[in-house]
Length: 181
Image (cartoon, rainbow, N blue to C red; front, side):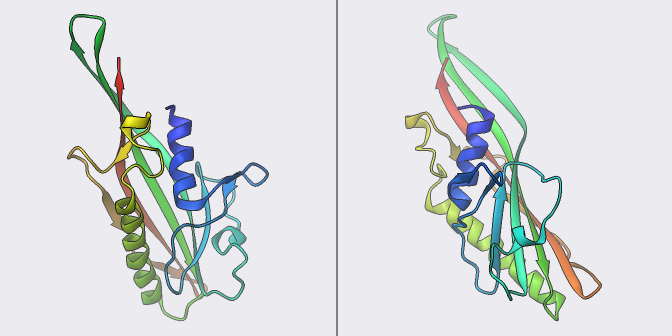
């Protein structure tokens, strides 16, 4: 797999097929009560369009959008049987940033949405540790296996201004490929 196919696979796993016209994934695979799920992107967008946070769910007080980045990463090789055979592990360090916007009357609602969203992301990863890639046996990858760094998250402190509240939930983990090298 390439870095681009790993990112595409993760975005597809969390939000359905890619829409080349909008350069987004628009079929959210997560469900959080009280939170409108928005688009997923393969990188940080140039502009943060408010509609991307709600995907047509007019009237929802709180919405979110996610983007996936692969950075940094590493490659480790182990030689077996001389210089021609071995095993290679390619690690893609994944950062999923979920931006949350809300017009809810209380900032605490955004904090609750962050916790619920973190739980939904973890449940989705636990449902398929290959995140739809087929796993290492099929030339794909696995997530959250192999010890350090595991699956980590940072639940951001909601910030309110002009009766709107925003927060950032960051989830990081390694997507590991194993290849005969």
